[in-house]
Image 1 (cartoon, rainbow, N blue to C red):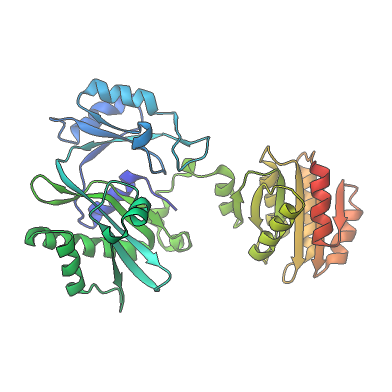
Image 2 (image 1 turned 120 degrees about the vertical axis):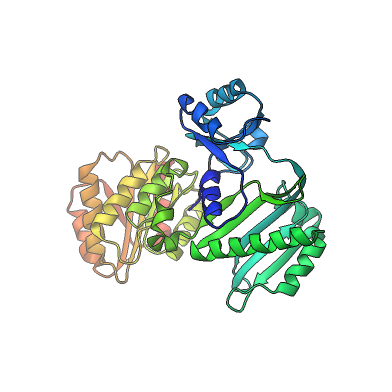
Length: 387
């Protein structure tokens, strides 16, 4: 789960990390109140709040020196959509704009904490090359990337940290501030179950202090059950609507660009199903795993979810009954078709636990559902019908 920049900075403040004061704008009348929350003597930075990077490249971040410039920025963006190189062509809605107090900048650095799966620990990545895409730095100047692993109970090796401070050319006071920032970030990362914490840029101000000018946080979705305060920050408007609805029903769903809807139980079988559709020159419209313990209710919701995609011209259901009973899957399909209007072909392949009973239910339902015994035949059939 992603957080907005302003939400990330609110968490930073809870852990005593240095961030700029800010005011939030959700409607034009909020501007005066937002300005009062910052030192506006030299202006501010207006920032579109959306779950995407690259906002500045498309005008979503702007220096505003007067109230009129803020009003113009708000009128240009609020209620609109922002499209960046990290979004699709539809972009993301802009419902919030923050105005941040200005900071005088001498240098821009990069810092992040990540879950390092290769080394089974949390790792910190830092670089003198901040304010730009860190992937580009890693590709063109890998020697500028420094990495510190937090191992042995997530402890920080002080000697290693001193070496990092030396390479980052910090003086003694900056080294002390950096150590405090690292400790605060590590504590935030662990206590809030984060998968990514990024500060880009971490700046050195003209006064010589370290300051978190930007903030990006990703939270581990599997830990949200114990992070109620974080869960309350979720902005569903920034997520694919179908993917958001799928989470409500414990469905694993990812939107794709094709026209053949897929409903499968098991992630591996789902991947194999999509591959087989591609083998016959078809294009999957989604990845959808209803799970190994799918109920007829969940199957019904899954079918409705697939049909909510206007690009879907046909549906392939591929169920292997291990724990799940194929007759319950069939009941869910029949119930969903009877509840909503279905005007696309549906091919169903049932194998395993109670599959014969499931096929009998479908065959006697009077519905336009085509049954196939093998995945190859089912995939070929749905591609033919869609074409």
